[in-house]
Amino acid sequence: MAIVTEPANDEAGYATLTDLAYQRIEEDIVMLKLKPGSIVSEAQLSKRSGIGRTPIREALQRLAHAGLVVILPRRGILISEIDIRSQLQLLEVRREVERLVAGNAAERASKTERDRFQGIADEMLHAAETDDDRAFLRLDGELNDLSVAASRNEFAAKSMQLMQPLSRRFWFIHYQEVADLPHCARLHAEVARSIADGDRAGACAASDQLLDYIETFTRATLDSPRR
Image (cartoon, rainbow, N blue to C red):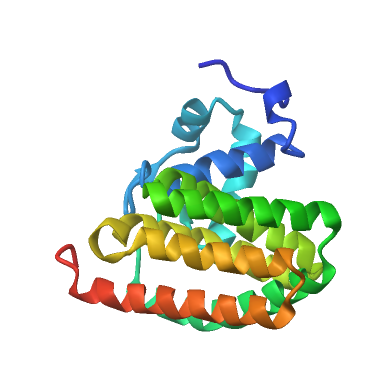
């Protein structure tokens, strides 16, 4: 694989190679292609992603800040383990931040953003009907990013950036055991629809219902056969 030194045309959505490196490594961690507890090197990640060492190193600093990796001097990069107690603590904060983000987005989203929120709602319902986990994960990430952008609050944005990757990885490792993906996709669709409609109260209520489900799902993993 050739090493990328500048973004290609199909990567124009990424402002820098560091952003692209972050996205590729984060996706591999969330999708468990990089297993919790494993150790990798910058050179391996560079070869794997096709991106040079400097952007990889910068992306790793961000991933460490998000809690997805631990940088071990002279040893490599440790992919963080998954801890249910930490996940439950994270959900306490996530509930409050996501309610704020959803409510603000309902009030502040532009016409273009509202149209896309409605599109996400429709696509989420389709993912629910077809039980499409890959589509769900892609739409979940897009809904998070669009909600944060539409909320127009940089501090909420920073909080969400820290929490979402850990939450998505936890979901991916356990959803086949205890999750009801169609139901979860419908809950996400309701958040997106309420924001599209400009309904702040509805968006906040839908966000709370979604987090209620996610907390129930998280606690159910304690009884999962893999635990």
